[in-house]
Length: 454
Image 1 (cartoon, rainbow, N blue to C red):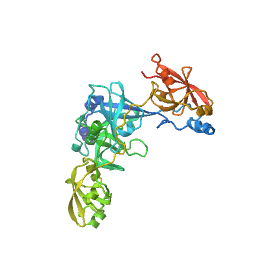
Image 2: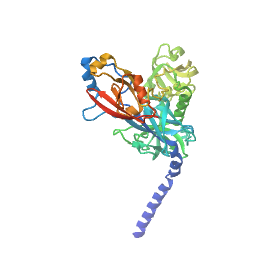
Image 3: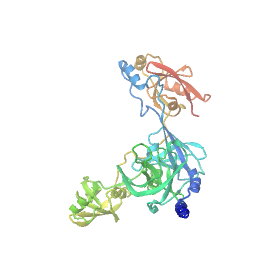
Image 4: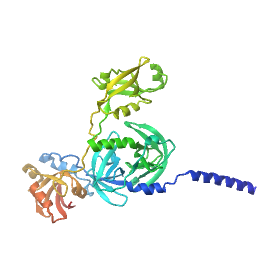
């Protein structure tokens, strides 16, 4: 009996040992690749989207400033801060991350693995793929090696490095769960699905294969709780790099278009149209005057191939067309009335929906990051003040100190201000490192200390 238990124990040990022997060792990969991964911190100024609102009539003054004020006792609203990840693709400071990490932010700080911090600017963003290219002013930086996501196999081990919940340089591992996934309203990315633990803060970070090559950029999760639930999605690195190259060279991404509305071909629809199997993209509408219309595409056509590439699912078509340069003559294989037909189409250009090139250099008039204007006599009478300037735009130091659009600045360092020129002169005094601003908001006025930029 003892021998029987011993044999069982030996057998279990061999199984356990065999299983553990097959598990990969990520230590060298993490050590070598972490220096190329960055932590991104963003700041979005509170209540200052766009220019200052028009000053209301005198009898509306109190309600106006009451709306602008935070709840009593809470003081000024702090700027909104966010975090994400990214990775360096060149030694001269170009970094890939997600658009949703850096879009519409007022300040962007990149922290490297060696704890150095740099202000970054956005070279360009592409909302359709959620890819953004940013840059820091530095050289001789470690850069990642780019891999081929087409060589990835389902079940293959992959590793993510990023800053989930702000915990920098966190490594998590898993396997490729599926390839070519389509997500709702994401028509241009064949996502890599993994079970790698990805959480808020991992966005924009790299996904490595066991050879230490980046094969994807972590972008999305599906979750009911807001945290990791086993479904993570990465943008294939070839898609991300193509977008980055266009953003770097042109500041925007050019995509082809046909001008059709399509839907999936189900088994029932395939049978109705006389197809042997459900495949292709069923055309449900054709835009008049579009490239498809000019090529002779009609409603109820099923597009089976685009430039010789088979359309297995309807989601394949926008990816293939979008990746085609506008003006290129392409070939369509369609199914119409029980027979295949061939059409030639001159690919058009997709309209630019403000997806590219956003500079991160904030327009400002002085070292505090403030743009101000003079008050009219009527505004001064309504506010019951004799001097001051109106804050129209806020960024940088002033935003961090809590100054908001619509505030009135009465004095700088105990000296009254009456014009924007006078305000700029006082703020730009090179002998001062900070400024005390007397800020009026509603019926209250109080001093705010602002540390000035060099």
